[in-house]
Amino acid sequence: MVNPTWMCQKHLLGEHVECHMFLGSLVKGISLKGYVEKNLFEMSSLQTRHDALVQEMEKRYITHNSPLSRGGDQVVSSQIRNSKIDRARAEADLLNRCPECKKRKELIEEPPLIEGFIDDYLKDEDEDEDVERK
Image (cartoon, rainbow, N blue to C red):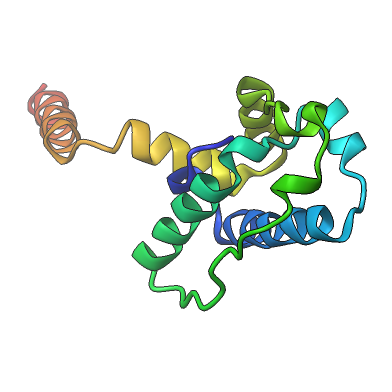
């Protein structure tokens, strides 16, 4: 699972919809076998993941009117109940696929330092003045 703050709006909203789709599939008895086998679904984190996505949506002033309804957990196999997402692979896949998500991650983890920018800018100006003086 990728940090929601890194996600572009398209991926943030897309994963939110997937939370509802996963739960709907569980309630209807639709198989999630492929998602489980590929480590793309984690039932134990479905509610907390939905909540984290909603929290990020609200920070971005995106209206949310779809609480995750309960149900589905009583009808699943232990394989689905114990499934885990390969977090490192999910992160690598998303950041390789989406330049906007990658850019958001980079900006959040290493925000540009204004002081450093100003220092570099002033240093460049000083060097330009030295060249002009010669």
